[in-house]
Structures are given as C-alpha cells and as structure tokens.
Length: 61
Image (tube, rainbow, N blue to C red; front, side, top):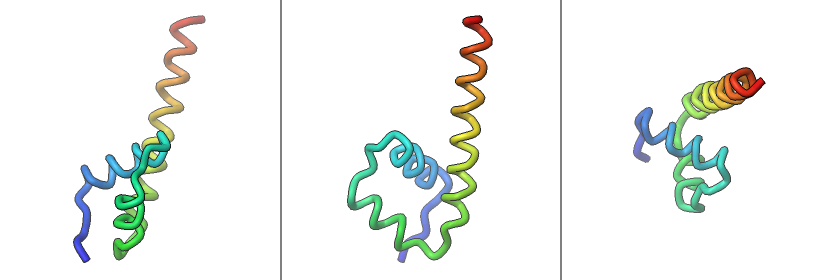
C-alpha cells in the first residue's frame, strides 16, 4: 500500500469534484490508510470554488 502525497490528493479531489475521476484512481484512493487528507483538501477545494464564484459575482455586479 503506497501512501499518496499532497499533490496526488489534490489531483484526485479535483478530478472527483469535476466528475472525471478514473476507476483505477478511485480504487487507489480507497486503499489509502487514512481518509483525512482527502476530506481536508476536499473542504478547502470547495471553499476555494465558492470564494471564486463570490469574487466573480461581485466583479460583475
């Protein structure tokens, strides 16, 4: 079982959020010993997307 680094976690979360995660990567993610890095990066990713959307709306209006 190979642990993933932060960049691999970020790529996996981004692919999952965008809906383009491959089945092999999906299985690899679930073989990891801890899900905590995925949760942390996922929450930060979603908050970042919300922040970008708020910024775009404020710039347009």
